[in-house]
Length: 299
Image 1 (tube, helix red, strand yellow):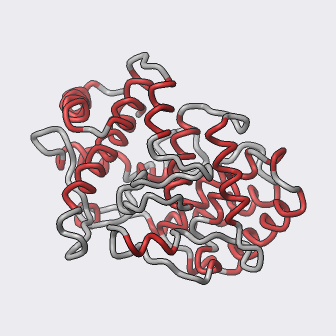
Image 2 (cartoon, one colour; image 1 turned 90 degrees about the vertical axis):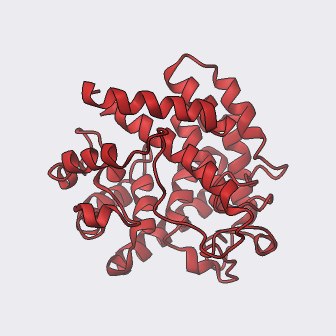
Image 3 (tube, rainbow, N blue to C red; image 1 turned 120 degrees about the horizontal axis):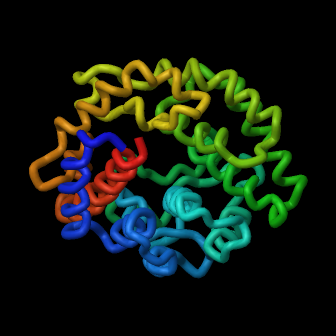
């Protein structure tokens, strides 16, 4: 960590400790202050349902209490940060949820359940009865989760799914957008991923990254992928693609930090659920602040 980031980190930590949601505060304490992992797991249980999936606003733009692929993949990202293995009960429960909600004909999942339509949410989270609509997001990320736990997944189902993910990725390269890209990056970083899939991702993702990553301040002021969202690890194979724009992107991040230590969001719910958006906004600012603390501590 460079010293020039310390003031920004300090006021961000102060904001998180005062205003952050309990999950984010527990995760910060676990990652950086010797906090107990059990405290994080306890907070995660507040979002977990009896089917093993996660809901209840784990991803703040979807406040539905019922389990969703959206919230469950987000929870798995937390599990990987904590270093949990596939045999941990939280991961095993999520795997069971994914297996039980798999749409065989589409070889995919619904991103949000139909019941989400009855709860506050961002306008982009709409139920779609065609699970194939989600073949690029979140399906590749779910494949990564199942691949980590492949001892608990029927081999035939896993390889059939993997074949479909690879085929659709290669067929639709020109259509992959920023959110799809995140899912394929998480898949590419899955330990011991099938070699043909890993090689295809290493070959094809650079062109997509170059197309999707924003590199100017004008673009960073809007919703989009910033260089450090791809990676800030100099040993990552994709780092050379963002290395040139990384310093300016980090300087911009410091410049846009608010006086209270948080960062402004680049999206909102518009006119959707104006009475609930302030709650979701606060939860998102907690999440974004934690993400930025992690970034600035790790570079």
